Image (cartoon, rainbow, N blue to C red; front, top):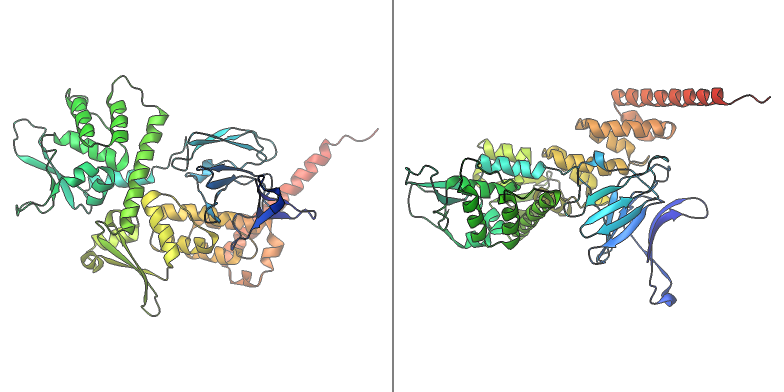
Length: 476
């Protein structure tokens, strides 16, 4: 049995975690000692175990200021570590407390509870991809679709036949070795080198009997989950099913069969299964990066003052170029495009491993100790989606101890979303923040916004108070 947070006898909101072994009551209660302040103090939150009792999920609750929260945290019982488990599309994630959690297969349901002291609702979440079912984040599939359309950084190709029956020449569809191995081991085994000077990439020859349109469709499905059928080709569906069977990936083949069947309505479970399939592919790809399989870029973590390299990581160029900075240097003829070595300055190994995992899988498992480091790196190397999710975590950690530093970082990098949240925090804690030693170093523009917000809130509170007085009937 586990207990998190709550209040002590002095009404102080806590963030400690305790366990009690019901099979051995003599041991009593055991407290987990944490290095960091994650999650922040809360009460009226709800927790449950999942992943075969290896992890605890903690969601919602009230913070020390009695404001409802929307963060989700995961406690790893094996390593005794907390992680933030961000649902994509943060704006749809309800703030809630005093609720119940129910897990049905791979889905978690939030039942009942209170929002802003009045609202009640039920919301389903998919634990499969860490998304709310009605707000699936499409950043990764969109990027991968564009990459395969533009044939970016390809190092292998499918040999196929033309859709024009009068054209008997061979045609080629470029793709990526690590993606083929991650998604289709059968195809990967059939990759062959070629001695033809006009063909500069290895080829996969065992599908040369399939039409180009069919193979293109399957490649798009492998990369981003799209399966777009050609209505004017009677043999297209049959050929697609034959190709999926040849891939020898049973789960993949089953989903393709469903989507190819004209009588099958594509339901949400099919979409979720497809995302599940993409998730597995990208986790395999991440492991290939760790094992240095088919990697074509070396990332060096370098001290900007001394030039000393603190760490080296092999990655796949297709994935690293999710960073607009990396995409620009590889596309502009800079020295990095020749050496395939990229410098990341003043970044710890732990922070880069968090970033690498996010670039491959879309999962952001970041602790308080590296959150700001990951956030600033995302800003510097132009990883917009990463910045957005780090901002959400930073907002939940705002306090009078860090508000000045965060305001200055957000201002320096023109992060308007985080700045807006910082201004709200300052307005709510105006007297304490404006008396801080570093507040004088904040720009005048930010000071003015915070002051105006504070005055506006005071006026609204006063107006509300006056209205409530008018509603009180005088005693007879």
